[in-house]
Image: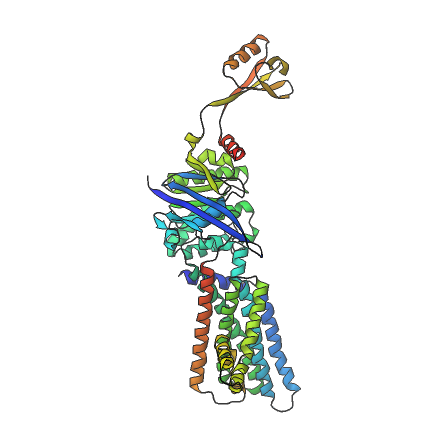
Length: 254
Length: 305
């Protein structure tokens, strides 16, 4: 009950944030632009629409998660609204979870809206609806949930600008860390390899959520892989939230 | 009388700067608040009043010491179940309207249904904010924020109400209304913890006080015990006679028009002043004995420290 009250208020706050609409506006432009880009393409035009469309949803969703997520806790502390909130009989954990769920709800609605525009553009071009596209979007949403947890983690101890930079760093590392796996295979077994393996386990691998290529090229996706990716997202998000709670639990609000 | 709130040897230091430098804010603060009283927590700016309150409410964690609220350790959220809090310069979600704001906090406290609506309507009436209830908080003045802040502090029908500088930013009428509300809270059987540096407010409504200075409690007790009934001096306003006539009887503080304000320190000399005025055909406008006030005690203590 308390968590939902905080989540509802967070959603209300996010709804009134202009950044959200600005990002949504640019996302819509990018989605429309994919149609024009297709006109310039030689060959499979639908592929271009799908590629650019999915990438736009991912990019702008990520920006929404980071830019809004990093301000979440900081704003409450900076504006001192947290004083009366935490003076109520609520756990700090409930506060943090409420904030997270409120933003996840916002991101969900935004992803749905972007997906509707995207599917509409695709439909106008092909006159068919490919439901497999939704699978790729669903996994983009899982990635965005994880990114929200990342932004929330950084916002519990630093300013929004630094938290945004850290989150962006996390995102880039997350999309490049798969190359570590290749490196591990090439390094001789020993201390170096062990360190690389440890690094690969600790660092996020956001490519786990990337099913864009498979969906665009109609490649088969093993159900097991979908299950593993979902589980990976769940565990990593939970890990980030627990870390945020540990930091937030003992924090002084001066 | 049961103790509602008790602090035992509470210490707190903050660390500032890139290379953290320790600053001790609270140096072993101990006091208790009895059930049903209005307790005044007094101290100059920067003495540690707000830090103490934040320790009580678990917004910051004391380095050492123990705080109990209704016998429960303050670290447990349950301890805050029956506590209401109004911070100094309250800041609230400015995108919410007064009513939405109270509804949000009522949800946090687990109120629902008709009782929630009625409670909110009652509190809006109590703090005189019915007309501004559907206005966004960003459009509120400071006094209005203070009022809506008091309403949120009373949402859970608290047995202990903690108010940090509640009268700051209020006009004289607002202050009087706030004082009346606080006295009414006491009549309803609630305990009020009031921090302030406006001595007049504390003196008018508090039963017991604690005075904090540089992180240490330097005095605490019943107001009646702290302030002696002894007359410090008598102020006599005389009309129609020059100040020089009274030089041997007291100190003339000011003259305006044909009026002289005289401070007479010895009680025996008051009769002499009266007879002198009668003799010289002057007129006594007023005669006021000045007893010791909280301000005198406070200023003395601060000076001594």
